[in-house]
Structure formats: structure tokens, C-alpha cells
Image (tube, rainbow, N blue to C red; front, side, top):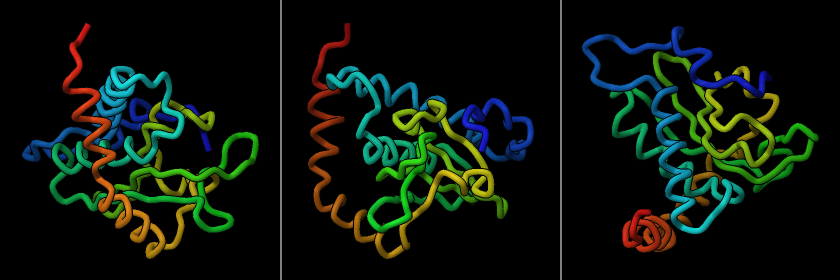
Length: 170
């Protein structure tokens, strides 16, 4: 897998029809990453370490709102079962969450926090090209994790509403 591949590299290959008001996935991922980094910085975090849960949910909201209308978008997780997660360049598997997006029967891994494991700041690659690094848990395991997270959405509110929106900007 080319660890430096980002949306800019494949942008010309994947554009939406002119009558679709959505943005290209690659551009949305780059914008979401920049905004997410600003949220983290204002919240007192200096890197994306251990932020994949929040980053994936934020990216999911952006893609669902501004992405292609016919896209199937979901959060994927790995690391709850053996042999799953994200494999860092040193070969170690780590617990991680990322977004899977399917448009026109093409599946893309979109990740704005994989840099914590040595990947590009924005990973935007076809699933077939990401198979050597991204290993999802079984769907039921992912759904169970998301169910627990939705029950504890106060964490998301704390991070984004209280810490970010109530702070004065520099």
C-alpha cells in the first residue's frame, strides 16, 4: 500500500456528476481533517493520538451531509478481535476506527487520524489497496461498539461543545 496516497492523487479519477451538489470525497476528507485538528488544538490536544473515535464520527457527519447522496457510509473498527485493526509500518496491529464509503460500487477507506500510526495525514484509498493495513472486526462487533458509544455520546458533546465552542478563539 502506498502510504503517501491521498485524495489529491486520485481526485481526477473520482468526480461526481455535475448535477450532484456534493463535493469529492478527497476534498471533504482534507477539509474534515483540517477542522478536526483545529478542534483538537482548541481542546488541548497536540496530536491525533487516540482520537480515531471522535475523528471517525466527525468525518462520518461531514461525508453524510456534504458527500454524494447515494453513498453508503459507515464507521469501521478493528482491534477488538485478534488479527484486526490497523497495521502500522512496523507490523504491529492497533485498535482503530475509520470510515468506509461506497459510491458506484467502489469502496474507499477514508481516515483522518491514521497518521498516529505512521500513515499519511489523510488516507483516501480503495479498499483493495488498503487491505494490507486495515482489518475490520466482524460487523456485529462494530455495531456493538457503536451502540456503546451512542449511549455515551456525552463524551462527544463534552469534547466538541463545551471545550471547543465555549472557548474564545485566539
